[in-house]
Length: 70
Image (cartoon, rainbow, N blue to C red):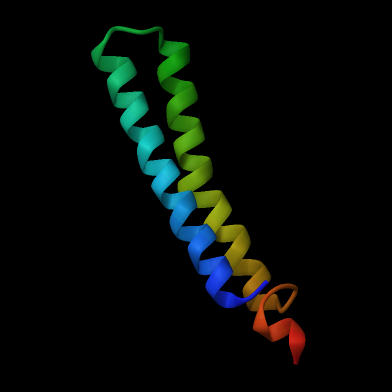
């Protein structure tokens, strides 16, 4: 994958994570169960923190992207 593709996937992941934070806030505001709110927040942390971290590590180690081609 090129570095541009990784960047776009990272941006999309962060956007999805932000939407999940919004979903958690909306679930809490509308009085949904605590399980639903925690599920939204866990999904948000997954998309905001873990997915970009995985992309960054693979780019830095050369397993993906332009570094792998050299």
